[in-house]
Length: 293
Length: 285
Image (cartoon, rainbow over all chains, first blue to last red; front, side):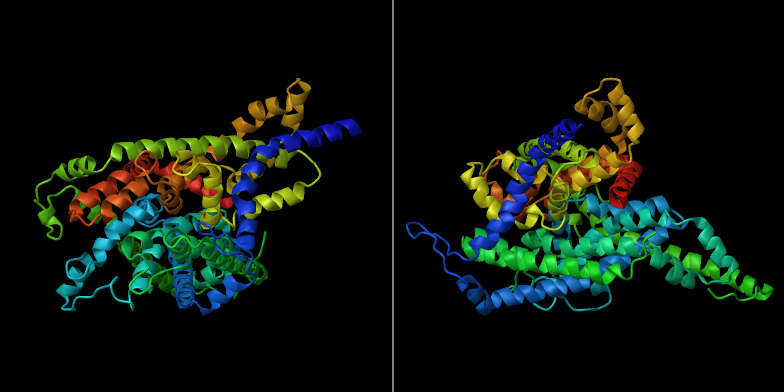
């Protein structure tokens, strides 16, 4: 018997090892190595990479671009996360209701999810083109002046935010839709017999029941607000004057335009730290408000 | 919940306002849907019309396929398509293989270190290879894999999401089935092949669709790791095509845009129900 248990776990480890090898090589090892590299200088040519302690972090604190990018990313997250969640929830409620043409509605909302962000960025680029672009043409009808949406530091970041919300909302809708379908219709009947208004029913019944989904979606939205930078490559390249650059885009620039890999590693450490903190914090904060079945 | 007494006039009022509500939300829902579809509709409009209709919307504008022909001839899109198909097929096949084995181990075996290893797997849901680009590039360089299709896929094939999803499905398989098969003389792998995998087919479909659309659309990592026509996937090819300042017309760029998203989009429109249901299935686990 003892032998068979041992036999079992050797077997289990054999099953696991191929996946674990790849997982460790491309996720855990690089995460740890990133932290280590952040304490070394970038080796260039004959100059070897040497241990420099906290120097990279000191550079970071004095790096204006870093702070700018961090603040941008903060605003990017602050706008995209709640707005995409609100839109996705509204979409899910509409599609779940027996509205006219719900098949079409569902298709329309979900389509951005299957389109490559890099491809749709091209289309949005044209929407935003000053004067000639679609948005300005429509504004022109109402007599508004031309606006250089992506070329002006005041609006560039918000142009990116709009694209991100458009891309994400339909994806999150799916999760809400799945959750809504598990809510028994008898609850609605009970509520209407009690004379509860539609809004009251949503606020006191539906919304609390959707809390686990909201937690899940918001963690995803946080991760995406750091990960989703494809459109920036095509639309603004972070400009003008870094006003639409985000942390991951800056990491890309530092690592693969300036080839300062040690500093890029330091920036990645900041990203890892933020993601971990937010995820843990969100979990504990929202967990209290989540009602599990 | 408030227990107001039910009065007749109130109910009628409610009935009326309910209808009003309904039409209001129908209206809002349609407005949003049109807004959401407009980029795609616009891309289709420009791609199928001559360039002078880029901003002129005339119902009788002549239709043309010239933009697609021009895009196809101006960049090696055939090669990009081939690269993307090889990449996506390779990733999905490898993911199915690795994740199945690992999920089976987590679902049905007890062994020392199981919880730690499972936590390590879940950690990947937070720390994705997408953000570890700097270090993974160094790894690929030391493996001599820079500018290969394999290098684009390797970081993603042991997917924490896939392992988690399949494990959840495998755990719903009744133990009796497993034991019955074993009594019949099936080996561990035999049970996996004959009992678990067939029962998990919907999950494989769901995960496969999610994975295909994710990797078909992936951009940043492929951009970093490739630098030749022979390895570039469509997304990177498209970005290079669209950025060249040679004054390419919008209509041609939009034709190329539609081309790259085309296969996925058509598949989505044809199998819409399965697509949405797959994402739902992948989402609720």
